[in-house]
Length: 267
Image (cartoon, rainbow, N blue to C red; front, side, top):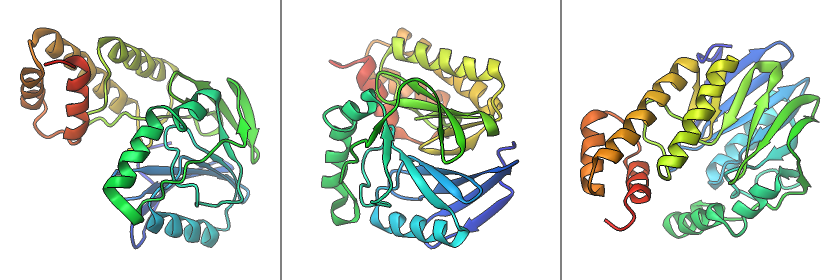
């Protein structure tokens, strides 16, 4: 698979990019919402699995209508890092892990949703999805598609072997990411280097369009440089200025602010 879609559909609010491979079609929905969320749907013979959920009501209606127009009947919602949007396809079971259930009910995910609800008001669906099915690590077939579940401290990542894709929360080769200190940066680098060794065609993330391994290498270089800048800085303001000077065109300044706060919590 290439990261250039075979078909693009411009919708009223967002945009849908379509990637067919064999019996499986991957739909990548750019919500164009204030959080720049991305929602993925893997479909096979009319049966679908949603990866992450739209959390603004306009997007919920738009994605629901689009899937109906494509003849995709969703059989599962895989809610990992984004637990809001409970009104989306309410009769469809939610799949999660023990880690994601905690993250999205009393952990960091729930705290983010609470803040978003205050910031965006009635446009935002703050309803939290409680998992109907808890998944263990390893293979699981859902709607005829094999997924490999990789739980982590926050939630879980996914592999989709049939289309040689992997899903994780964040990458973005030309935007900042939330890096919670040197150790977290090392773990992300190790993770991305693993993707490169294994030769995935696409890396899917919930805040960016599908990316390839060239993009993963770019992100590894960024993270390595970010860690070096942090180590050579004496306070957060210095670190932020140096990172911005090195990457002046990168998006996601709010994520950089959060990263700086992790590296220099008291400065």
